[in-house]
Amino acid sequence: MHYRSKLIPVVAVLMALVFTQVSRAADPAPDFGPNVLIFDPTSDPAAIQTQCDSIYEQEERNEFGSERHAIFFKPGTYKAVVKVGYYTQVYGLGKLPDDTTITGEIHSDAKRAQNSGCLNFWRGCENLAIIPSGRMDQWTVSQAAPFRRMHIKGSLSLFDNGWTSGGYMADSKIDNQIIPGSQQQWFSRNSQWSSWSNGVWNMVFLGCINPPGGTWPAKPYTTIEKTPIIREKPFLYVDDSGNYNVFVPPLVKDSSGTSWTEGTPPVGDSIPISQFYIAKPDHDTAATINDALASGKNLLLTPGIYQLDAPIKVTRPDTIVFGLGMATLNPVKGTSAMEISDVSGVKVCCVLFDAGSTSSPVLLQVGEPGSTQSHATDPTLLYDIFCRIGGGSPGQVKTCVEVNSSDVIGDHAWIWRADHGAGAGWSTNPAANGLIVNGANVTWYGLFVEHFQENMTLWNGENGRVYFYQCEMPYDPPTQDAWQHGTVKGYPGYKVADNVKTHEAWGLGIYCVFNQDNIFSDTAIEAPKSPDVKFHNALIFRLSGATENSGINSVINGTGDPATKQKTKQLILEYPLASQ
Image (cartoon, helix red, strand yellow):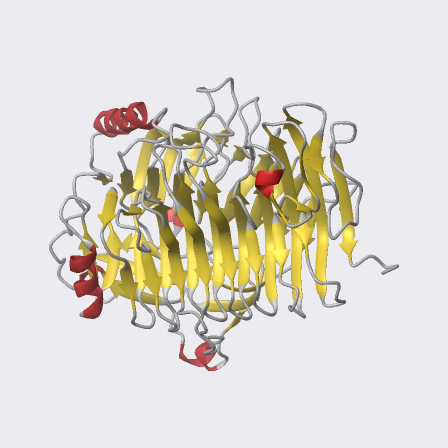
C-alpha cells in the first residue's frame, strides 16, 4: 500500500476500522433524477455505447449550455469508449477503482478547436479502472476537469497534438507512462506512474511516487515529497447488497502515493444514502434544501442548475454537500449561493457556482467574518470548487470565495471571471476578487484563479500554504487608468496582505494577455518583505498582447525582470532572495 501517512488525531489509529460491509436487504434505489445514467454489468453493451455517445454529442460543444449529466458504472467489467464532454462526470460505484473496470477508454479530446484543449472545462471522472484498448488513454483537459481515484492500466496522454493548459490529478495510478506533451501546466497529488515524459511551464508533484527527475528552473518541475494534510474526497459506492452509500476517507498527515491498493478494503466511514437529502433542480429551492439541512440531512445535488433566491446555509458540523454532474448553484437575487458556518468538518464536493445578473457580495462564504475557532483536528474541506462569472450570460459578484474559518483545506479550485462568451466584458461581468482568505492555517492544493479586476487572490490570514497556483490577469482592461490603484499599475495576480508574518507558496505561474495597448501590472506577486513569507518556483509570462507595449513589470515586489514582448518569460527560484 503506497499511501504512507499518519491518521489524525493519533487516537484515530486505534479507533479506525477497516471498512466491512454488514449484509442487509437492499434499500429502494435512490431517485437521482433523469440526468443520471446508471449501468450495471448486465446492461447491453451496445445500449451503453449508444447512450454515452448521445450525451457526448449533446455536450461536446456545449460550453455554456444548461444540460448536466452524471454516468454511473456499478461494480463489474465493461467494454465501452466513454467520451466526456462539458458538464459530464463519469463515476465508478465500487469501493475500489478496480471494482469497476472498463476496457476501452475514458476519453477527452480536443477535436473542436484545432486540437487545442484550452477550453476543455467542467468535466471529470472518478473511481474507475481503465484498460485502454490502444494501450493509451487520453485526458485532454484544462481547468475544472478533476481526474481522481483512477487506475489506468496502460499509459495516459494529457494532450491532443495541440495546446492544453492546466489540469488536476489526485489519488490515481497510471501503470505505464504519462505523456503531457504540450500540456502547459499541471498539478498532481498523491499519485504514481512508471514515468513522466516532459514538461512545459509549471508542473507541481505533491506526495507523488516516481516524479520526473530535474528541478526548477532547468526543468519546470516542483516536487514535494509528502502532502502535509489531506482527507481524500468522499465518493459514492454501491455495497454488496445493492445499497448506495457515501464513503468518507480519514484525515491523514504526511502522505505519499494513493490512498487505495488493489484488493485492500478502504479505511474510513460509510454513510448510507438515506442520510442525504437528494435535491433536484426542477423543484428544489433554497428553502427546501435548507429545511433538509436543518433537519440533520447531508445534501446530494443531482445534475442541473439550481436557481436560488437565498443562500444555502450549512450550519451543522461534518455536513457533506455532494454535487453530481457539475451541479450548478446560481443566485438570482443578489445573495450568496452558499454560506457555511464556522463549524468543523464540512465537506463540499464538486459544485459549480455561477454568478447571477444581480451582483452578489460573495458566492461561497466559509465561516462568518471574524471567525477564530480552531478546526485543526477536523478541518472543512473544499473539493473541486468551480466559480464562473459571466460567459454564457452576464454575471456579477464582488468576491467569489471568502474563507473566514481557520484550518480550511482547499483541494482543487478554478475561480474564473470569463474572458470569452456572450456574457464577458469589462462592464458586463464585473468581479473584483477571486479568492479572499481571512482564516489562519488555510492550505490549498491546485488553485486556479483568473481574470479578476482587482486582486485575483488576497491572503489576509496567517500561516497560509498554497501548492500550485495558476493565474491569468484580466484580458480586458480598457485603459491603464481603469486598471490601477493610486500610482500602482494594475493589480497583482497573488497578494499577501502587508500585516501577514508567515506564508508559503510553491509552483506559481502568472500570465498576461492584454487586449489594449499600454496595459501593465507592476508586479505579479505582492507580499510583505518578511523571512517567513516565502515563494518557491514562480514564473511570469506575457503570452500575447494587442501591441508590443504591455506586460508585467516584475515577478515579486519589483524583483525579477519584466515580461514583455522582447522577453516573454521570467522566473524566480526563491523569494526572498539570498541577498535580501
